[in-house]
Image (tube, rainbow, N blue to C red; front, side, top):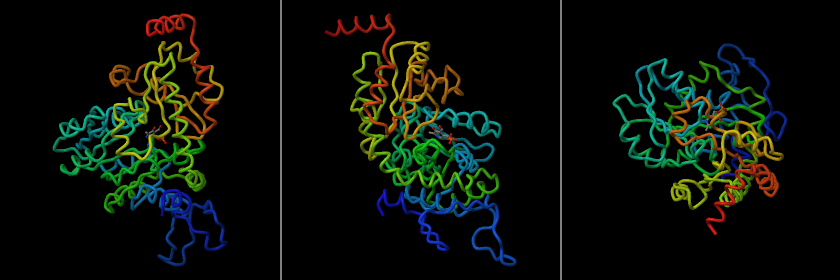
Length: 395
Ligand SMILES: Cc1ncc(COP(=O)(O)O)c(C=O)c1O
């Protein structure tokens, strides 16, 4: 089955008791058992629920994996993967990554003497240099959050497997529509399903997909033992959101391209980060590794922290908010929002400064998005003058 067909049908059959086309919301905590050991595959909804099973099977099919597991949030899914580690283990992570992942690594794993080394996201050789005898996991985000650098999954998978290390790829930003990490050699794929997978900004959720049975069993054990599972209604909403994933992603990308080009030509914009632009440092890798460039665009502008407040207050169509991947355009200020948990010196050294804005380009009419950006970025008089002077110099 092709991607769009799987998004609509994988893991889902018409309900055998009624013929209902949509998977029912099995809003139950427990299941009647017919005598000792006489259950029909479900005993208690922390361990398994049919609506959740449909979601887990659908996401596994979209990622071309064998086993899917759904969690109550992306971070709960991360915790499921990190349960593979034990005291004294070491992991390597790319240095440009979601602030909440950094917070788990630094503030929770460190309590168990599990140390994380960070390497510049795009430097393949640095991952191998960081390997120690006790390294158990390599953790990648690609495209990275918020600078949208790309990491060569195939090259890092080759290094990881030569050293008997598992490779985790957080595929949240790209979605399986544009990138299939398991096909490129990753062992574990992670999603904050809160984002593109659900796509409607009405659910917080997470998912893990793997190929290997023993890795599945270990994470599945943790999922049941620790209990960070999504309820039936959230599972159902996510399943419903997935059905339009392919059409949404196509439109997100089309609009993102237009936004990236518009910002590149805007006098108040300093730098645009979008892997689809030929000027992006990882554009060639993006063409090889992904089937599209996604819907996220980051940019820095000429101005200061005070200007950020002015810009975001002027927005009319785009909403100033955390999160991404929904149908509506959301603008976020990583330094104070998603990456606020990373100390300023570390954050700035990684390129996340006060004038960086991250736009999750929605699927509204693109003209409305561009007009909104244009009016919000309108300059204050002193900056205006600065820009006019620069333009005169260029002429
Ligand atoms: C790339 C990435 N991974 C993981 C997460 C965590 O997901 P959640 O917020 O669903 O816990 C996020 C959240 O923003 C994210 O952007």
